[in-house]
Length: 475
Image (cartoon, rainbow, N blue to C red; front, side, top):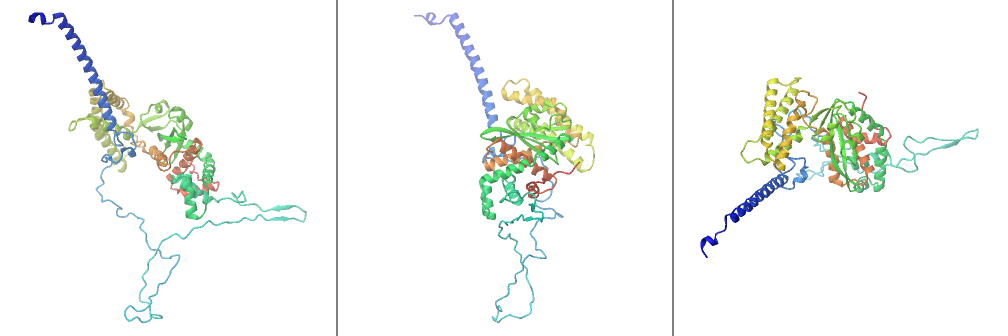
């Protein structure tokens, strides 16, 4: 057979070329999808507490190197000159003084009884004596009058049963359970071992419930004060309750804190908390969309959140290359420093030239970010483009702190209150019931607000157990 006969026809070759071209197109498309998916998975693996909202505990043992927004002060670590300190010092009038006489002369061994005292070296030991619960019996005397009527003496306020625990025991229980995040069982064990007062986990629950029930008026007052405040920080975070995911919502200022828990995360829960509906001040929060449904409020977005988002973009950029996210983050940090220095100096407005320069850097970086990511079709690039577009469209909300000094750079104030709830979950696990979670949040709101007014936890809890809860002064 000749070579011409073995050679395929032009029609066969053309069909083969078409088939190969289709396979090449399909393979290229599949490769593109695979590369996008790989990039997305690599970005997910690269997430940590520094470039996302993941908690530091999720970083494991290989934690990323810390990167703080704080500047070095130039001072040495530790207490500074003039700081009062809290070093243990001797007191002038000790509760007990014990004299330790020498047994005899250290040289010849002769008795030193009656010999003159030449020096006294004072050493003081600070300790807590054994503590036991003191039982006070209230005898309600009944006497009969000449007219035949018998009258019984009244019991002191709060003494309502033949046997009961006093307000300080209740305050200690709630302090350990809610204030220090011990479980009911460990709280009962602590009372038994520290004060020789055995109580049950059920008693811990009962004391907590009664304490929370006494806070309805307090929570309503704080809710009203927050609703009328000029600037309020808001945040929310998940909490395991009764084996399901529920949501803790935080609203706080430098004077007040309110924590609520709800099965929902969005508007339904925010309405139930009762602060945002009708709120007309500045609401500081992250970029989660449900907050923007409250149109009566002025909105300020949290820059700590967006700095983590920008860091995630930077982490995925090729090493040694310029990245728009770097410039945007540097500008935000510089603006925060500028505003902080301005406030420290006692001025009411930042230097307009310095302010305009850094805002210009930020705006230019965001514009470049939009342009660089607008034509990319991968899921990751779409996410980066969405970030750049959000920074562009909501620039005023992100930069509101630069001209309204009441507005903080971030909403860490609200996150700080939620952090205590997350710590409770980490130490003692989830809360067993929704009612228990509500009680926990009410008492944490009470303690956090009292602390903001320089009132100690235990003092506030004793007042609560006595039926006269601490209340913030009228404004």
